[in-house]
Amino acid sequence: MLRIIGRIESCFREKFGTPRQGALVPESAARLRVSKEFFPEHSLRGLEEFSHVWLLFLFNLNTNKTPPCVVHPPRLRGKTIGVFATRSPHRPTPIGLTLARLVRVEGDVLHLAGVDLVNDTPVLDIKPYIASCDRPGRFRQGWVGRCPAPRLRVEFMKAALADLRRLVPAGRLRRVQAIIAGCLSHDPRNPRDRSQLRPRKELAFFVLHYDVHFRISRGRAVVHRVEAADEAARGRPPLSGSLL
Image (tube, rainbow, N blue to C red; front, side, top):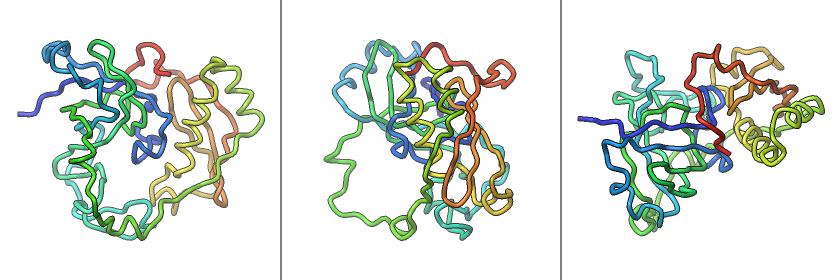
């Protein structure tokens, strides 16, 4: 029987814009509060000595009723490969695994960085990263080593920078800008979006408390405005305090 031990509070509020791997945006931030039924004062004892943790979680936002046998990873640029040779969220059993940096432990809360989880993701388990066991001396990366991930140059228009200075507290401005740039540099569009959307179509993603509006063209992602999100109208779980 699978039991949810807690839910992630993440800077990423929707699927679109959330990085495909946490290490791609090391500035990203999240919290995990372990439910009291699991006695966190005991079950988390000693975890603060580790730098990273594995998180097992549920892909709770998946809508596909029949998981595919083959998928289209963005870096394969339209080609297909077997689902078990990928980290696609569309799987027969929608369980994910990710490695996050453990910033600190405060009571029943894990403060995390370098995350790729959407806000309110259910977490099933926490395991410490142990380099001597988890990092093999020799390894192969298969198709991933042959197919570099897409990278975009990210630019902020003057109006977008002015928006950020107006909306974001000064002490957090640099990190918020780094999170936005990190998300966009790896092209959040899926292969269908890239092939079907017209060039320079305005897109937006929801991060922290902001809607980030951008356009992609000729290898560049240009942020042209940032707005305070209407969080109540989005129907997404709120954040309890600042993550940064």
